[in-house]
Length: 181
Image (cartoon, rainbow, N blue to C red; front, side, top):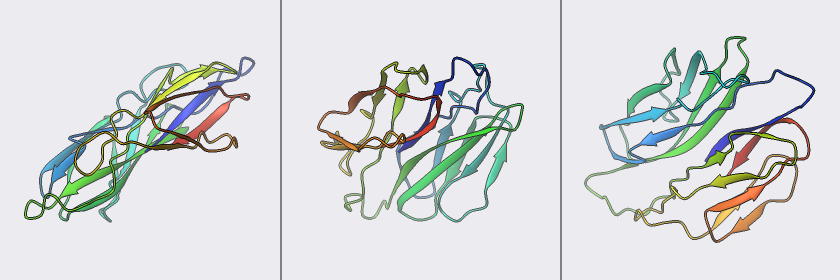
């Protein structure tokens, strides 16, 4: 899973949106709708974004919506990389992604990659302020908690491997960082 972590520049009062994405359910049957939600995406002023571009990862056409919530059904089982690009009123963009699991009802126990999800708190931080990243909603193919997490904070620091789903990380410089777990 990936999200954009924004770190404020105390001297600059504008920047790209900070995007967040969730799916419900995180694991769905073929031909059943999945609800994707980017409503926690905010612009630099902490206001809702104004439009969204969705890529469901299955080769279907990109979908542009004014609302942060959309549904999509998948025709085939698998793990799909879903991405949303959230746009603010100045047409600046931020993106977030996740992996959507789609199960074959005829073979529901087929081993598949884990479902990864990550959130950040605070979603917008100051320089040197520790950010809590939480991947506790990530599950393995049997819907059990994941046991190992590899974090890339997007700022050039070495990747960090943890056994637990929560980690803290401060940023030394302002910017928007693609955080991956």
